[in-house]
Image (tube, rainbow, N blue to C red):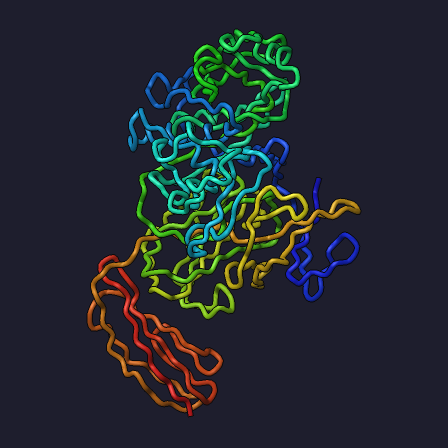
Length: 592
């Protein structure tokens, strides 16, 4: 069903039970792309086919494939007694990928406890732009979802080794007062970084499984390792009958095959292979045809015989698959505000919409990567970067970069810019993202929180952090920026928070640069004057920033045009490079 969304950029007033907004408001028809199912902590797409990437041209896939045969998957673990299956499935996928890429050995053991705890308790008191501000996921239990897991790893919380934070001493219901877990140094500890998290949704029914989606999932397994997924867990209220129905036995060591008619998924597992011809299902109800995923569970090796089982292709609950791609810790600095990622909803619209985060360089910075979230496969992502902004909008400074990228997978994508962009310490810069889907709609690239029943807690968006551009007009995101979902006479309200974009880069070099320029000049109103600035040492480009653009302007070549009488200051910078640190000099311009 098509829904009407309203983005309101104003201050809210209370009236009855629906907010009324004073000042300007923008009414924009939008379509939801999916919604968080908070009962199962599963994100459901309205059109799963849009998450399937275009054909890769791979040769026909084998009818049977098992990562265990290649030593590309870690062993069985045990989540008992906690509901952290999502953390185990996530780490199983990441471990398998690190083995596949040769980054880690077969004995790698990542910490599920670290991921589980800091996903649900992720508020940081460090520098706002360093670890995603004060954001965290909130849940009434330990249970959450893959989107939050990916967002936690993307912000730099882990992954760490099991020895860094063992699950054996992890007690989620009692840890509130344990100082060992309220440790920000431990929270931001990281041994392996998340590079990408690829999402695929399947539209499987009892009569027919989603062949296109399954093809894409199989390619992910072959190329990158195990993927995380979900199944419908047998009802604990009637365990005997339900274990028999879906597994064909009520004995733990005989639970070797699985088939369920349920669409509701509430248990996370990892998929480590497949068998197109498997048809020996023990369940009372039989699937429509052969074919099964090979599943690695997280309840120890005494269940399912050895911890593994076959799950029918025709189980509708297996509708989501996530492949976590890791890398060695790169040493890059991160600039980000989007700590919980997508949030509770994602929407698109037919008119152009862009999002931007604005930052101040904590040190000399060489930006060479941008991370963002794409809601569908095969999106085009346009990235613009401006620097020396004056704070009025994300495009108020000097345009440093623009390029459009084609992104294959839905999910978190780390995009290499192809060059290093030097930003001097203390200088403001912005990263602007415009994401267009294959069906020519524009993704609204922001954290969205259900105002009345939130699953995620972006918590705060501060002045000057994030902006939205709708039809060419920039507006700042505030606490009262809303997205409203109107269906008939009922209104659902979502708060809009920070943009889903991160800037990454290395620190600049250490060698000094030098600038030669007159530090005081005089000119008349309406006249032009060229500053004869010259870099006498180093290799960084010169740029100029003016203190008051209402009194004067300055071009990229250092040409000043006087507009009003008074005094302005122009700062001349040399940009940092891999070898040299930035330098600056201030010129006082007296306009008569």
